Image (tube, rainbow, N blue to C red):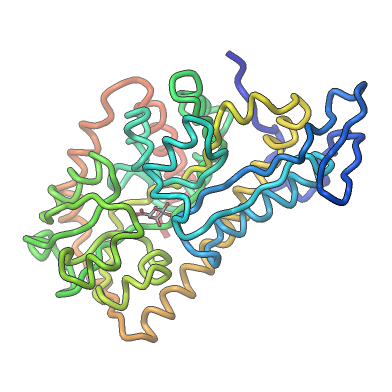
Length: 357
Ligand code: GCU
């Protein structure tokens, strides 16, 4: 089966103008694109607009990255392909959208690492506690498309028809709740905490001392408001952008996860593109990832400032060693096959290059 390779252009060089795929066609006022019959790169008619599902707000850097992706794809395919980004979970939860990606009814989506596990359990590696020491280490690992990431990114193309285009950072995840700051695992006892629809996340919260509930992101706010949940765990951006900080104001820096998000595509949708258009799309991926990654640090700082301005309380007095003691055996025992070991080793190597600050 044909695998769609990424550009060899490093992410840092993406500002260099990319070669435009030749596309001699005409877009009329109605938006239909008509190619010359001799041109294998001509548009199908009408112009194809890919849906990109996103579960958060239009302020998020992944939304901006999706918009950039669409604009650049229009340029690089001479107007044959466009992307429309659907924010705020309007196309469904990440777990359900992945089924649409698989059957080809949605072409693109941003999804969290946790919800990839049912499709290939080896995705668990970067969803395990305390694997990455820094976001820089995470990004370096995820950008290694032709090395450490290659097998994982293409692992479910044949079986599930899902192609992973890239991973990006989704920051550092910490615990928040409506009742108290968390300093040690003892403070987690009895807290009902939301996790992603993922076995590893359920197990992780149990080991930390909490009571996990799996839910799509969009349902968390009302569950916190009604007291069905005491809290959740997430990055600062999501805690604030989803207004969880209004109802769960104690945010504690457990730093238990640096878990990626992935930009995934329907393999079927990629396969029906001409080779030139598909190559143009793949060549854009480092640029798209860079927009998402570059925007994340500023958005995190702004989110934290906003949360504090509305009265949220941030606690950085956390016994990280105590959390590591209950969680790292789980991480180690989950690295139980060669594929996982290879990914884990790549993370450890990058931790040497990019240690915690
Ligand atoms: C983060 C991540 C999202 C994910 C969310 C969640 O915000 O970026 O992709 O959906 O966590 O916990 O569901």
